[in-house]
Amino acid sequence: MPDPEVRLGTVPGDRATQATDPVGALEAAMKTGGVVWLEPDASAAGTSAVPPTTGPVWYVWSEGACYLLTGPGEQALPGIVHGGQCRVTARNPAGGRAITWAANVEALDPADAEWAAVAPKLAAGRLNGGDPVTVVPTWPGRLVILGLRPTGEFATAETGFPDVSHAAVPLPSPATTTYRMPSDITRRWRRRQKANKKQA
Image (cartoon, rainbow, N blue to C red; front, side):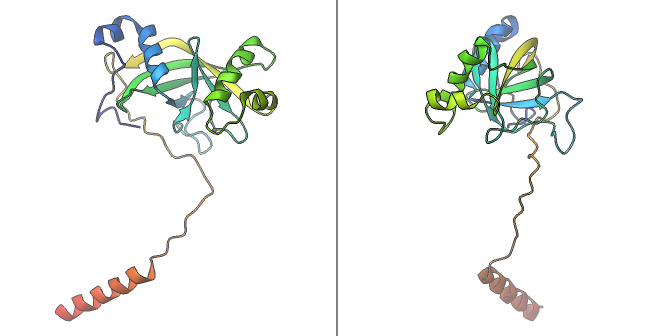
């Protein structure tokens, strides 16, 4: 995501609103962001299994909270666990950073009314997710819905972002790519080398 030292994003709305109405600034950013970047609690981050930041993750914003779906076959959220905390960064429509806010993380109980209200919204927001009526009943016991609830701590371009870059670190992966120079490029390179030697 964009480095704040290159271009600071701003929360939609005027600057006075950003400074005097943090709840409105948060709502405006989260309703238009589409994806967020997450920083796990410092005690859990910084290892090969838990990088300092996630890549962009999709979410649903509802009733003042950010909801995420994770589990087998869904987006991985290393370090974002029930009972912990994290920092959430949302982008603005121009692609810059709009707001960063602290959140308490809670895993929803499939038996609660909150799960029943949020799960269909998440199912409807998934790309190629299928019919929500069909897929939602398969989630309990297999997938987890995490609710990120604001603690009240936030930063915007107006109130001051931290100086460090929040560029996402690639997640660990066993995948490798074997590099081999195409033969036609190799032949041209060798011809150029011979020509250079003759000229020397």
